[in-house]
Structures are given as structure tokens and as C-alpha cells.
Amino acid sequence: MADEAAIPREDAPPPTVPSGPFARIIGAMNAVGTLWIIGLMLLINADIFGRSFLNRPIAGVPELVAFSIVGIVFLQLAHTLRSGSMTRSDVLLNVLERRAPRLRSALLAIFHLVGGLLLLMIAWKFWPSVVAAFQHPERNFMGNPGFFTVPQWPLFILVFLGIVATAVQFLLIAWSDVRSARGIAR
Image (cartoon, rainbow, N blue to C red; front, side):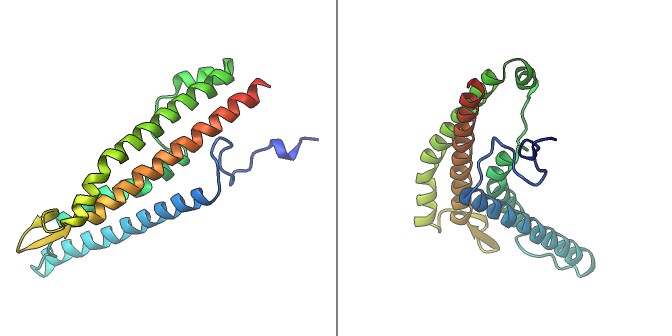
């Protein structure tokens, strides 16, 4: 009789990905990004309909699309990493999985730690831009003055939060990789 604990459930997260309150936060960020995509599609279609049939385009759609794409990417980045959907070449990792699983986990821990630290450095350097955009919205905007403008500070805050969330996710996965490497060694 097979041990049921050894059989992974399809609805459970991969064993190398920690779950908990942080996973719910980045899940909510991902859901907001998905809803934003739906809203953006509706806006684009309404603009196309207005241009084509009513000769009345919606002002600022190109600016809102550019704004939205960046916001959506950073809202969903940490969840993409958590779910294992981040693009990477894993030929070496697949070979190490069979031949040296402890080395594979150690290598992944290093990669994830470096990713987390790099994103924390990016967040540190980006924070002054967030503050400046918030303190001086009249100088930090997208669009054409007199026609359509949107302040940049909300986008900058979303980018900053996405960077920090992804950095934390990298560090949580790195910690899990270290624990996995120790567990395999025992």
C-alpha cells in the first residue's frame, strides 16, 4: 500500500514553494493584475468601437495601455516566480536532479538568493524615484498636457511593491532550497 503522504496532490503548491500569508498577498496581487487585464481589454475595445463607429475615440487610451502594461507585469511578477512559471533554462538542473540532487538544491538556493538580493538593490535605488513622483506629481506624469495626463506615482508604487514582493519571494524560495539541500543530505 502506497504512503498517501508521498503522493503529491495536484492542487497543492510545489514542495519547494512556501505557502502562507505572503502567498495569499501575492495571489491577491496576481488577481488584481488579471482583473486589470480584463478592464484594459474592455477599454481598448470601447476605444476601437468609438473610433470606428462613432468617430469618437476615448482620450488617453494609449497612455493608459502603456501605464497598465507596466503595472500588470509588476503586480504579477512575484506570483509568476512562486508558481514556477518564470522563464529559465533548466537543462543543467534536470541533469543535476537525477545525478546530484543536493548540488541542484544548493545551486538553486544560490540563484534564488542572488535574485532576491538584486531585486532588493533595485528597490533601494528605485525608492527615491517613487518619493519624487509622489511629492511632485506636476512634474511626473504620462501623456500630453492639456489633452490627457496621468500621474506616475501610482505606477511607481506598484512597480516598487512588485519588486519588493518578488525579492521576498526569491528569498523565501532560497530558504526552502537550503532546507531541501539539508534534507536530501540526511
